[in-house]
Amino acid sequence: MNPQPPVTNMRMEARTSSGPEATLEVFPTWADRLTDIRERAAEIDWVPWAIVALAAFLRILLLGMKPPHFDEGINGWFVDQMVKNGFYRYDPTNYHGPLHFYVLYVFEKLLGRDIWALRLPVVIISTLCVYLTMKFEPFVGRNVSRLAALAMAISPGFVFYGRYSIHEIWLQLFSMLFILGLIGLWRRGTPNYLWCAVMGLTGMILTKETYIIHLGCAVIAIFVTWMSHLLNRVPNVRPARQLWSYLDLLMVVVVAAFLIVFFYSGTFFNWPGLKGLYVTFETWAKTGQNGNGHEKPWPYWLELIGRYEIAIVLGLLFSLYCPFIKNISIRYLAVFGVGTLIAYSIVHYKTPWCIIAIVWPLFFVFGALLLIIPAKFRLATNISLALVLWVSLITSIRLNYFRCSTFEEPYVYVQTYNDIFKLTRPLLALAKKDPTNYQLVGHLIRGSTYPFPWILGDFTKVGYYESGNMPQDVDGDFLIVQQDKIDEVEKKMKDSYFTEPLTIRPYQDTSKLYLRSKVFQSFFPGRTPEFTGKPATP
Image 1 (tube, rainbow, N blue to C red):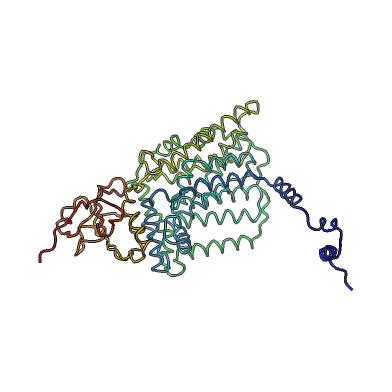
Image 2: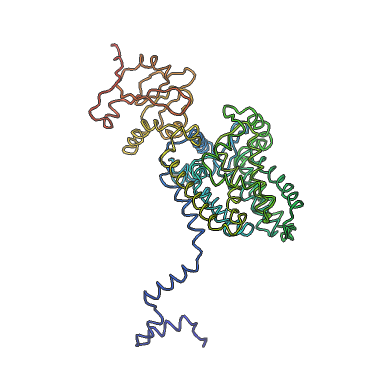
């Protein structure tokens, strides 16, 4: 007869023993369990998780407080077209890579068509970037990587654009993964860093055409860093023996090629989309040179950094010291960060959200102040760094929760005005109360109405009239009318309406909002309609 396993023997003893001591040995008391939990918790390094939790909290708090940005409205509209067509049709003359749209498609399928579903993927990726910063620890040191991650977690710009449904956060993630892979191959040579490098490059290609800038700067930074090493040598910088095989290389290249073909071909439904992989560079070279309405002078990025990113200011200043840093990885990150900043400064086309993909390497230089400044000044250094982080956190809270729609803030760029809530809040409340209200008739008689085409995508009877077009019957349950069309429209209206001035975003004239009184009366108790049209003649 085979002996019983130990656990079974203990169970049998617990069942047959009449003494309380045996039962206590098998079933520990609650005090014993709590002690065990405390001991296990004491063994866990909670600092990285606290940094990640802080990053997630700042990014997800009151996520829907500001209305959808112009670009968010366009991105959401493209996802709506994917629902109709079954795939994303990549157009290299107008739009960025396909990955972001497919992710939004999945989230909208899971969570519905609302601002949380649109922004939540970016929140997750932005938080993941903070976590990824600490994965540089083997090459820059624990304290440097954690200080860099904390600075990124609370950065005003990185929080602000970590709450926007735009492509740049993906470019940041994949450029970080790519650089981590390059450094890892250089210092360790293991297969996992090969995957990091190739998947990082693949992700950048799937995200935005400007990946070519980051790729070029990464290659140039290798030569510049090596030249700096020849001038001021760093010990132990010989490339590590590569531990990956040709089979590993083949596998990662096949996966990368499949992903690129899969997404750019519209999941195999739009093969001409593959041409965009090279056609796009001609288009975006012209855009970068001309500016297309977003041209800025070369110091633009420096002005943003000086206004908001105090940690990056210090990182940029101490990058001048990089030839003397005895850590070759930090030296490379400094060169890469400064080089990318210079490259983007040369390009005339500048939008502020690009900053998160440009300056992230400089957080490591900021963290490296712990290594650069002599030990005898360690107390003053720690106090100064703590003050910098507190200033950054306060600035971040002020910007993201109190001034996120204030146009005196340069980060608030082409942001939709809160004015649109005059329509969306009562209209969506009616639809939530009674789904038949999705059949309400709406006329938007003006040019460039985004983000309304996405916000009102579930309303089946909304028309958009530009370039002088006009509905046959101008009366509707709600209207937005461009300033120069108001007189013409009002002459044809017959019903009574509550009216409000409404401006969608900066650099647009103020429109006039009309809400049919008999539909929206409950939202304006005791208020008399401001406009009543002429009744139809018998």
